[in-house]
Amino acid sequence: MLLAPLLLALTLAAGWPLARSIWLSLTDASLAGAEPARFVGLRNYIAYADGIWFGVLADPDWWRAVLNTVLFTVVSVSLEGLLGVGIALVLNAKFRGRALVRAAVLVPWAVPTIVSAKMWSWMLNDQFGIVNEVLLRVGAIQTPLAWTADPLLSMATVVVVDVWKTTPFVALLVLAALQMIPRSVYEAARVDGANPLQQFWHLTLPLIRPALWVAVVFRALDALRVFDLIYVLTPNSAETMSMSSYARQQAIEFQDLGYGSAASTLLFVVMALSIAVVMVVGRVRLTREGVSQ
Image 1 (cartoon, rainbow, N blue to C red):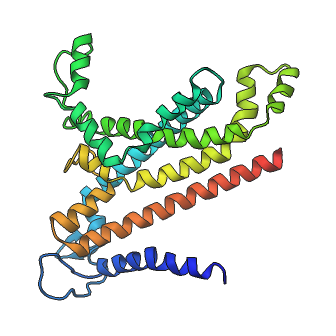
Image 2 (image 1 turned 90 degrees about the horizontal axis):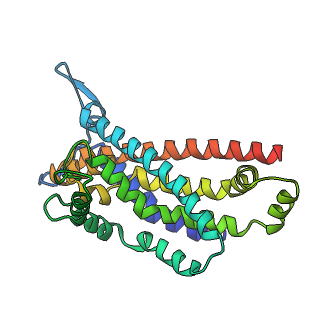
């Protein structure tokens, strides 16, 4: 009974838009059409007529967007996890000016994504960007690079900007876990002759793994539905188009609301399955470690 109001609010805030999107994906709704939407079943997902397969699942651009999104998620979240742990270890150490450094590290995460993406698009511009200017002056490159337009550089550029922005989030969660580890644990390890590397591998890493796993799950959720960062840095680029960008393009630019809703529904399915797998694997791993300990 106490949870009923919250469940009702969640149903209205999340359940109804999702149900509406699923319904629209089963119709031929269009932003340009004046006629009422008609039910077409799974035609927007996959259909066969006149010897041709069509629908979202038959569109090579959709599968390319899926591949781009998965690649972006795996690379960015992996780098953010590694860098987040390293930064957290540094911030957990005692040194002069630690409070100032902690505040500075959190600045990228505090900046809105649209603002940071636009800032980076200016800095990476091939004509007046400061990044090319610095690299040219130090001799790292001979000619300015089109970081966000070159097919070979655009995905790497998007990943780097995302890592710069969201690594502080991972570092903050890991730092909170580090702060909860008793000092006596490390004192006992030193008495037993454990060196710093052994202390990290056998003590620190197992104790911060639950917090790190939570950070990875949240970051994976954000990365799978990435839109704003890619839309600002590389608009309408096939090399970096994500599933969210594909759905937006179909629904808004092409004004095919039913087709775009089908892509959005498939994005929801991909996210739900991915997070379910991550949660099950994480729960099994943490349970086994708890039993073994």
